[in-house]
Image (tube, rainbow, N blue to C red):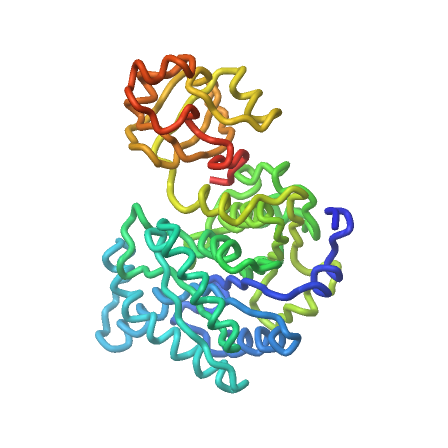
Length: 385
C-alpha cells in the first residue's frame, strides 16, 4: 500500500496491534491522577480489544501520582523538580497508577500487567528480544501491558527522557501497526497555537521528514516532559518502521475510534514508503550517540545515493571519545547530520586511519575487525535523534 492509499479508514480496517501513549496532561490534574480520565481511557482501549486489536499502553503519570500521595500524607508544600525528587515521587506513584488502571480495566474483565523499562534494559539486544517475548506472551493471554520508564533507577544518561520516545521504541518492540499519541492538543498545527491564535490544524502529514519540527514546536506542556516536539520526533521514528502515527486530544469526551473515522479530529502522520527493519531501528535508537564521524563530500554521496558502507578513506574528522561498537553520528564537514551507525573502530583508531585506503589499515593498526568504519547494515540515514 502506497502512502497515497493510506487514510484513516484503511488504517482502522487493517488495525491488528496498536501502541497507545497517554501523556500526563490527559490523566492528571493539578491535584494528581484523574480517575474519570483513567476510566474513560480504559473504556476506549477495551473497545479496541473488542475489535480483536492488541493494545499496549504507554502511560505517564507516575510522578504526578506520587507527588499527590506524598502531599496528602506528609502535608509537604514544596514541589521539587530535581531528579532524586522525581524518582522518589515515581517510586510512590507507580503503585498508585497501576492500582487505578487495574480497577478501571477490571470493570471490563480485563487483566493488566506492568512493564517497567529502561534504555539500558533495551540496549542489550538479548534483553530487548526477551522483553519482546514477554510482551507477546502477555498479549496472547489477552492482557493489556502498561509500559512506563523505570524512573526509580534510571540515570540522566540512561533515561528515555520522555514517554513519547519510549512509545516509539515500543512500536519497534511489539511490531505494532499504529501508534496513537493522546495529548492535550487536538492534533498538530502549522504553527504553535499558544503563540499564534490563527494557527491551522493539519489533519494529515504526508511526509514528516519535510517538516521543520524544531521551528514548528517551541514549547513544552507544563505537566509532562515532552511537548509536541517530542511527539513529532517519535512519529518520525515510527514512520521509519512503516507505521502511521495518530496524534489527538485525549481530554474530555474523546473517542479514539470516532476520531480515527473523522476527517477533522487529530492528525494522521503517514509512514515512509520504504520502511527500515526492526533491527536497524533498534540499532539506531537504543542508545545516545557517543560521538560523531565527519565525512567528505564523496563519502556523503556514496552513503546517500549509492547505499554504500562508510570506509576510512572517506572520513575527514572524528569528534568525541568512544570505543568499538559505539553508536555515533555521521555528519558532513559542514555539520549536516546524515544519520547514525555502529562504529567498528574506536575514536582513537579512526583518527589514525581516517583518509587511508583499505589496504593500509592493517599496517597501521594490526589485525582489524573490518574494512568498513561503519557497515551499511549497521547504519540508519535520516535518523530522528
